[in-house]
Length: 149
Image (cartoon, rainbow, N blue to C red; front, side):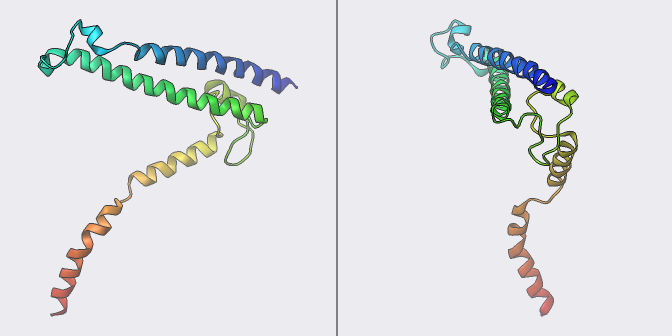
């Protein structure tokens, strides 16, 4: 029962964080870029004239996307809580340490499974692209033909 009380506090925090993230994400892309420039049209402006505004807008879009991704992760955590699966690793089924949940309340994996995922990602970064296999075939056939003669 004590564990449920600790989880309830984390869930309350998650709900508050979710509401704040949605509010901030909505505010980021609320206005049109023309409003911030005070221009009726962007067509007559040279791109260098509005470079700062374009940069700021692209930064806002990136921040908006990060917030939406966080909201989606929080939604998954809240759904897991409703199902009684919160605090259990979705890969191995072991309990996720409470300290990890305090640091990342929307995590769905334990530390060991997270490390394993990171190792797999690093491995995939160093593999050769599939395209190389397809692109090299015609040339390898030509080279093999020359060796036979």
